[in-house]
Picture 1 (spheres, helix red, strand yellow):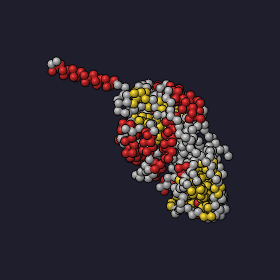
Picture 2 (spheres, rainbow, N blue to C red):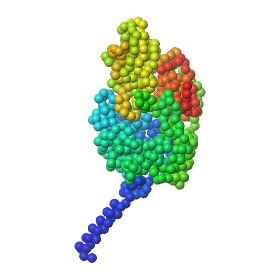
Picture 3 (cartoon, one colour):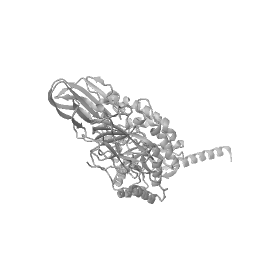
Picture 4 (cartoon, one colour):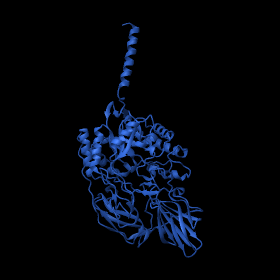
Length: 608
């Protein structure tokens, strides 16, 4: 063989090798790739069978239990959002500790043999307060969230970069379990600014999310608005929509992968409305059909959990405000408290039949218990426990006071006796109105109400308006304007009221309240203790109370409201301790010496 001939052969061999490499379905870099109508991992076809579990809605001590149950149902992947408002409660101050240690949740998923789909937003929807955005963004009255506005993009980009420090090392290409990372979230239902979407895409790349597959997710009808041409697109839909929605996806992306990014295996509840359930058999049959087609699926939710504290969101149906309940049970295969439902068994069977894989046995059930009733004898009046006020000529929303959640009290003096219509423009979201300390009426954004007739018989009179942030809207075109409190002005008889004292009541902790052995009615805190010999899951029956919040051992469990449908708050065993436990209830409609009862079962369909 002469030298020139040898060089030609070598070159041809290199070309042939390169061609063979290009012909491979996908590179073996342990990164998920879209190949034609499916995904491949390490050069092999990979069908995602996933379910959503939000780390923030599950007590950290139960993460592994829920992950084991996911694996035992036949899932090979779990999906989670990341909640910006939890991790950056103040600008530039980050919290990834304890319950917020999302990296540990992801590591535990990998230890249980599960891949992870990451949905970092920064907008997440999720029936979560303000769609996951931190409320401090709204301190800037001119901000335009979810747009290219620099007032939004600068903190959003900073947040994604900080998140990348925590989670980019856990991508599959780096040896971790994160196989896919979503760009934004269902943006097509909000807008069609592809330049904004490219900014979020680039921010994720700059944050280090380059070793997992980036993709977008939208409703099938919104695909033209929310997708990017360089990224795979998946679709979200609910029970009964599979065949029709996948046909739309195929028409939009004839050669793209077939995946349902959210198969709504249930639904959420609003205060004052019915509890939602779906046909488990119908969903199981549809799940089996999708898997038999070779499609990938993410169940939303596999396990819903609880929107602890103030973290429930809300929807808008036209002009009707719809706050979401504390429970995020979602009629999911695994209940709010971790119980395996009949839907779990049907889904497990459907997955096994479609894949031919027998999953491991699920963990043993978690004990539940109804503890003895507790009588409240110690109380503190809200109006006797006020902090120092902020003075302002005009009413200001919570955010202007640097407050994110809780309540705010507006107080002014009406100098002249008069009758007229009190109008709160715009009220977000629920108010009690007092004259000289007497409750005159309530206004509820749900109904919608923003006016109340006042008859002031003498002067001067003290006007108090106690406003609750019931949960900022998390979806739709209304949500960017979710300032809370009285967000514009308060008028009486058409004239603007002025000279306000505003009391910020975030209620982040209750340990400094002046509790004493005395009766209290109206807007009151009640405190008691109860003994626990062995911590077990339980439920606090709230049906005897009005409207408010519960704390146990200083941890805010969530909201209650007598209008239902939720009638009990889930109290997980990890929130309890052996011996003495404290419970505090704030009730806008408090009655003296109330009694607290426990239940060993959830109450999700209460109708007063």
